[in-house]
Image (cartoon, rainbow, N blue to C red):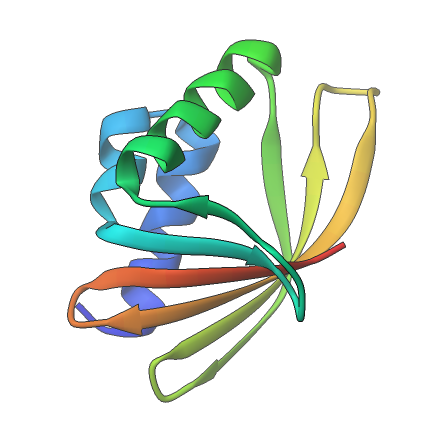
Length: 110
């Protein structure tokens, strides 16, 4: 799969809240960090726990892709996160670093 294919597929799995498929696109040692800041998640088990919580807390949570840039093994998404129809929403930038066929790192700007 190309980096574009991986980013597209993980976003579809996120929107379907299919935790197993969603997590399958991430490396076992995935790192998640605030852009230019602290690491917030390290490893797939911590990642799975975080998104178990997110999907449980926000069962109607969806992301609308606003823009995407692909450069080599890096995919940069501008996303609108919508917690529930008519509910809280916010914008983020997610920078996905792909290694092999997995997302190895995600840096978020909020």
